[in-house]
Image (cartoon, rainbow, N blue to C red; front, side, top):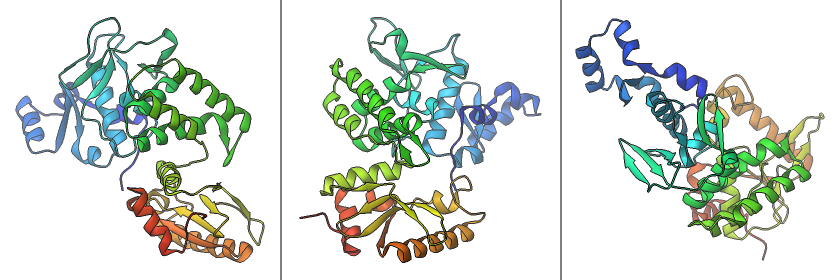
Length: 327
């Protein structure tokens, strides 16, 4: 099971050449470890154990690369941009696996790529640059806007939802005032930008909703919109027969069906599952579903990550459950 990492955890995984030498390896042995793919050379003099690297999601792998670039740079270090800033902020990169570290060129020079680092010539205000645990990067608001302009709608929306969730959502409920303030601020940012992709970005930012708990829920909502579903309930609340509070991913009032996105982490990731073991989590989910069915009389439709790759695949999945958009 792959896992996410924080910036502090990425620091713990990083090993310098001096670390490897001090642990008893020679220069020749270090080269042999890299050749045998037991250790991965992230950048010059920066390494990570291959087993640890294999366990990381794309975001974690890119965060390691970003950290290595920071450690090898002269102080105060580069300003990370776009996907690289996103992983510093802990935002998701849905189905995006960057092959380069992205930074900003401060000044009027043209963008270029050197040694796996893409340097972008973009205009930044001082307020657009922040520091996160010693790393400089674009602010979370600017990062979300840049992702919405330059990546797929699925990636951009997942990041926007996650950013909005941080400021406007508590216990599955989205505060209307905080959400409205976020939308207004992002709209004002987007209104003065003339960058390529800004029209797509404005649509994504308008569509953002912080109640999505996972990128898969964000992408599900986008595909449902493309299919033609309107009037969806997000995070509908159900009170169980014994007073338990249940929150579902989606409600389809027209069909009297609850929709649930089942990511693997829901059952396999200890940080996400509701019970101790995967088996206990599956059993707890069944009891939850049975209780919700009994209280509401509604049915359930479930889908996985493979079903949200396109609107057509999700539509076919929902039709198998008799769920169709209103006429």
